[in-house]
View (cartoon, rainbow, N blue to C red):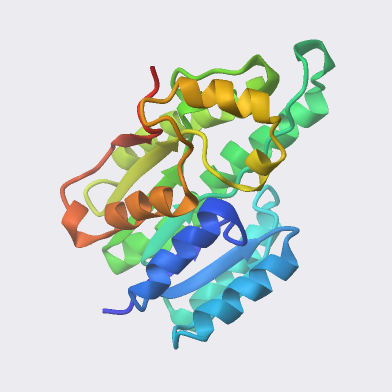
Length: 243
């Protein structure tokens, strides 16, 4: 059956790769973006060229009114949301004493508070439909790969793991809720990384390389499939094995 899939932060990187994964399965994909309109339009075009329906919606998930409008548009168009992939996230790295409260709140509002609110809005419809899957994108930074330069990001991703466990309890047994915790992945942010730093980070990984976005997307797609029908309240690390 054609599934309706909402992916937040889907215009680039892991989100875009995830959209392609669902599109290959002929699922209808809703591409949420905040600032990357050009990339979102290009992604929509590529998906629709394969004969699959795709919708793009601009919404800052840290703002309740924009989330409300996004969900209302999806429901009025498709009548339901079967799968939610909470992927939208941001990072403002800096030295500890240069971090500001304003930026700390901005990161948490997007990475954690926004994820909570999107999940709250979507899960109401999933419960009405008596089925649904939620997959949250956390990070191994939220487990044990901490970085003082990104302490706000790390805190938010640890919060995502806690949120995942609590959502699984609140929404059981109707909605399965799981999380993935990627490590370094070859996205736009990695392209800006100093080669020396990248080399040092690769030495810490058993597979001696960074992940491709598609490798993270494959795990997300699996968790949303019937093959994962008995996986719930679980966090899966996808980081190549950290030494």
